[in-house]
Image 1 (tube, rainbow, N blue to C red):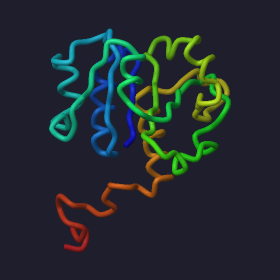
Image 2 (tube, helix red, strand yellow):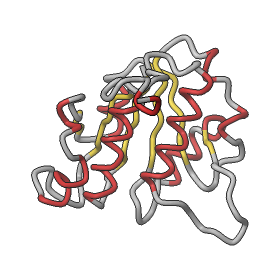
Image 3 (cartoon, rainbow, N blue to C red):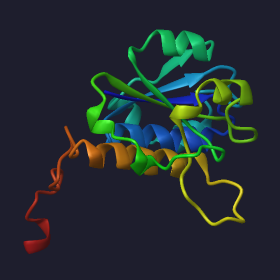
Image 4 (cartoon, rainbow, N blue to C red):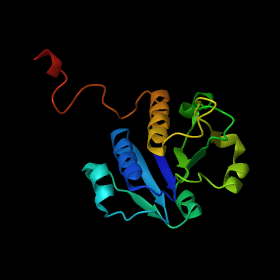
Length: 168
């Protein structure tokens, strides 16, 4: 199982979009309080559409509470990471994969990153770019993990309209 952990997310639309990505790419979403929005807000509900029917969002009071509830290998996404996603062999992980993303304004606190340097991941980008949108970053990382796991549990054909839809 892949777990996506959002540390104190601030923007409803990002979390709604991330929930959709997690549902589509077979991952469990966790959020750490405090949140910068209400989970029943119009913006959040619009962004997640009806994908909350595919998965249940897990809420936690602290990062420690969240991580202690999951038995997994933990990775941290940060612009300060010294390894790229492809430098990790996710297929070799014999337990759940947990990926922590920081809040939009400040990221993951530096003390947490310092304690986990060997598991800090940086997505390569233009040298003058400070960061990427967190929902885009989640999608990139989730897809890379699923690629390495040979898309386990995902469909490679169109199911809703039928795999032959383009031929009709």
